[in-house]
Image (cartoon, rainbow, N blue to C red; front, top):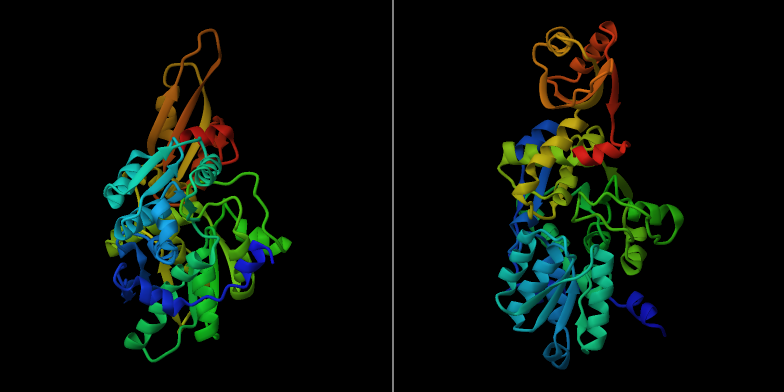
Length: 424
């Protein structure tokens, strides 16, 4: 029997994994959220994996797999490839088990993530920066593993990883009975490589089969949805890496084999909508959540009618959000909400042209947030890059009408333009 078939037929024991993890992880809270419950007229419970020791659920799978390795394997050491949460869960596991670990990360990885990985490893891990992309890094990590007779700890595509992530589901079903006597009607699960959705989904199908399982991917990285549509995993040519905790080019073979059976619906969440939810959760709930962790809350608007009067669980999968990204998050949110727009405007090269634009075209609450202009001599018009922030969506139509009325020559920049990537 091939290794793949052996893996596919491996029985999963989430309860046993929960016992192994008991002294290592935090049993994160399942919290009733009054604001979201009021907004959607239902009972919303948040599974707070952002409060995990390494601020994500990834520790569960990494430790569960490593703790089951033979002592001879542990003695030779372990390897992983990751630019984020898996690296930190792996590093913490190395420290707890006192095992030498090597973490491969892409060269452009933010220094904050490198520092966090080293901190959680506490001297037990070595970080190697290799390659420009995760794919380059993963290839180098696997080659290093073979050359040194070590064991590779994958981020999602292995039974022990899925088993560990599935303990999130064990805790949810144990804890819900302390909060309500009613069953869970919907559970919303972020999907990256598929480890969390496979583990939690399989456990729920066994112990709460009536619960509707909704898998969520970022709009710019629909690897699971594409795999389900085509009947097998496929590698996407290009993805938007913004939701770094859930943006993968190819779903796992093993995780797909489970997810296709246990996920009832796959939905895509726009990156801009995710950003709006990140800001709302911070401002209204004082919860710091990373983009992947915000998807389960961001999607609720799409299910508003279905979930009225129901019991809902949203898995907040992680809180590793770099503060340096907040300006980009705000920008993406404003653009998604229709409150931020960029234009290339050809101003007539005459005195008073800009003043006329400000006084007559812009509304009283419209704000210029970016203006780049270069005067060109012997030309009738000079181009300017103009960024505008509006107070309401309705102000956008008024703005366009004013530009047309005053014969402003403009081109709006949207996310399909190359220059958009420079701006955002």
